[in-house]
Image (cartoon, rainbow, N blue to C red; front, top):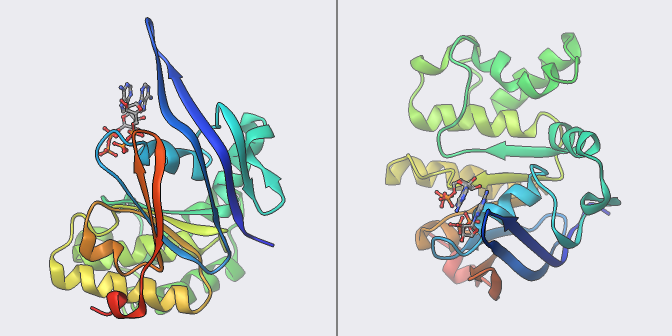
Length: 233
Ligand code: ADP
Ligand code: ADP
C-alpha cells in the first residue's frame, strides 16, 4: 500500500535559450521495505530525481505515486504537506539546529506541524534510543561526533513515520568506520521494515542496499539486485 511508483517521469528545466531534459522517461517501483541506491555520473539526473521523490518539485510529465497520492497532480501546498509529513530526509551535512538538543532536533518535523506535547517528546526519546543516543538526550550537536550527529538526523527522519528515508550522500562526510556504523543502522532499520532510498556515488555504500538503480543522461541505465554475498561488508 505504501509503494512508490515512478512511471515514465520526465523533468525539464527551461532556461533562457534552451530546455534541459534532466530526466527523460524514467520508470521504476520502490515497494514498501525496499532499500534502493541511486547512482550515476554527475549530471545524470540524481539530484533531480531526489527532488521529485522528496516532493520538492513536480515531474514535467509522467506519474509519481506515493501510496495513493499522485504527486504529479498535487498543488504546491499539498506537496509541501506530503513533504513535511511523509518524507524522512537525511543529508550529507546532517542539517541539525545547533541551539537545540538531540531530543528537540528529533522533534523539528513535528514542530512544523504544530504537534508538540508529552507524547511527541516520548516518541523523540524513543527514537534517540533506537539510534543509540539514549545517553545523549540533552546534548547539542557541537558536543557530538559526526556519526552521532547523523544518528540524530536519522532519528529525526523517522519521527513522522515516513513513506521512506531519503538519504542524500548520508555517509559522505564520515570516515570509513563511522560510515560502517551508519550503514549497519540502515541495515537494521530496513530489516525492521523501513524503506530506504539513498543517493551515493560510492560503490562500497551502494552494494549494501538491496538494489541499485543507475541513471545516465536522464535515463534509467540499469536496475539490479545486490546478492546477499555482495551485501556483506
Ligand atoms: P546529478 O545530481 O546526477 O549530478 P542533476 O539532476 O543535478 O544531476 O542534473 C541533471 C541535469 O539537469 C544536468 O544537465 C543539470 O545541469 C540540469 N539541471 C539540474 N537542476 C537544474 C535546474 N534547477 N535548472 C536547470 N538545469 C538543471
Ligand atoms: P550534486 O551533484 O552535488 O548533487 P548538482 O550540481 O547536481 O549537485 O546540483 C546542486 C543543485 O544545483 C541542485 O539542487 C540543482 O537543482 C541545481 N542545479 C544543478 N545544475 C543546474 C543548472 N544547470 N542550472 C541551475 N541549477 C542547477
